[in-house]
Length: 292
Image (tube, rainbow, N blue to C red; front, side, top):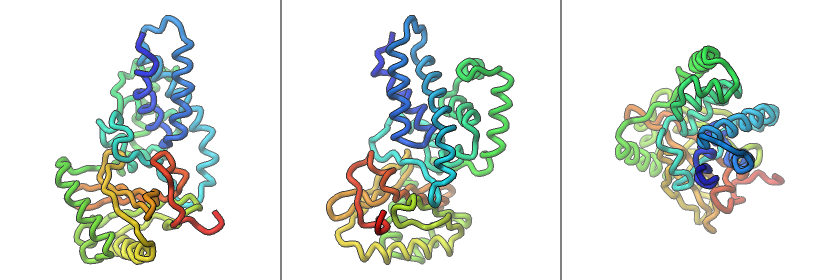
C-alpha cells in the first residue's frame, strides 16, 4: 500500500478545489488520511483517498453554506501563494481564484463532479462509484453544472512570459496610481473584487469596467501612500501572476491575483481578510477596520 504521507498532496489537491479554503481543506485531509490508515485491504489507495476526501468535502460544503450566506462583502477563496502548492497548479484553470469562485455557484455534488472530471480526469464510472450515483446521473450533473459556469470561465493567455510582463506593468501602474497606464492594460469588461470579510478595508462589491476599475485602483494607490514602508512582492497566486503587499515588518497585508487574456487584464482579485492569509505568514493590522 502507498504510504499515507504520499497521499497527502492528492488529498489536499482535491479538498482545496472542493472547498476553496486552506484551513478547511487541511481538516478534511487529516480526517481522510486517518481513515486510509485505519482501512484494511485497500487495493487502490489513490482512488480510496480521493473518494473519502470528496465525500468529507461535500459534507463540509453543506455545513459551510450557511456561514457563506452571512459572509460580509464578497467571498474569495483563500489564496495559495508562491511555492505553497506546486502540485496544485498543473491545471491552471481549475486552481485559479476565478474558477474557484465560479464553483461556488454549484451544489456540493455538482462541484464534486466538476472537480473530479475536469481537474483529475476521472472516468464517469469511477466518479459514479465515488459519489454513490449512476454513471448517467453523473453525466447529467456535469452537463447541468457546465451550463451554470461555462459563460464565465476564466481564460488565460498561453504565453506565461507575456502574462508575467503585463502583470509587472500592471503592478507598477497600480502602485503609482497611473490611471492612463491602467486604462491601457484593462479589458473592457474588467472586474475588480475585494474580500475583507468585514475585518479589513476592501471594496464592498465587485467593480466592473475600465473607468471604474482604474479609478478604484488609483484610490488604492493614494491610500497606499499613507502606509509607511510597504512593499510589493511579485508572486504566483493559484498559478496566476499576482503580488503580495507586505507592511514594514514584512507582515502580509493583502494578496492580489491578476487574470490576463488577449493581452489585457480581465480580473483583479484582492484578498485582505486576515483570516484567509494566516497560512501564508504573519498578517498585518494596517488595513484592519478599527475594532475588528
